[in-house]
Length: 157
Image (cartoon, rainbow, N blue to C red; front, top):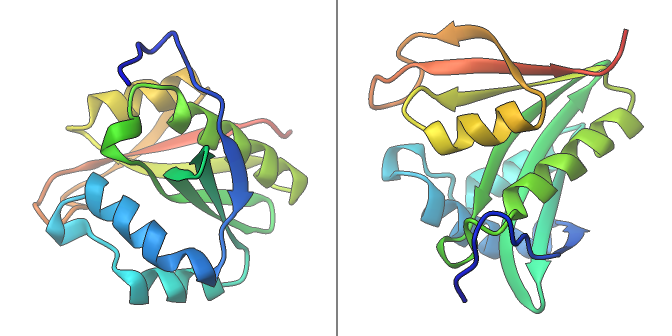
C-alpha cells in the first residue's frame, strides 16, 4: 500500500487507555531509538498523569500511530507522536496532530509546545505546516547528545 503525501488516508481516532499500552509501546518502538524508547511500564505511568490524553489512529482494524499530549492550565505539550513504519507518508501524523490541537483547545490551552530533534527534518516540516514556530533550543537534550528545537503553536490571546 504505497501512497504519496498528497493522498492522505482517513483514520479513525480513538482515545487510548491502559488497555492499549502494548500497542502504544509497539508503535513507539518503530519510531524511536533504543535510548529514546518508552516501554509499556513508562507508557502506563504517563497515561495515569493528570492532563494526559492519548489519541490512537486506527486504519481499519490496524493501529497506525498515536499522539500523547499533556494539558495543564493554559498550556499543552506534545509528549510523543509516532506512526508505524507501514503507515508513514499517508497524512496520519498530520491528522493526529490536528486532533491534539483541537483537544488542547477544548481543554482550555492557549498554546502547545513540543521538542523535536534538530536531525528530524520530516517532523520539523510536519510541525511547521501545522503552525508551530521555533521558540527555543535545548542543547544536548537527547541521549545521543543532539539538540532539540522547542516549537510552539499559539491560538489564544
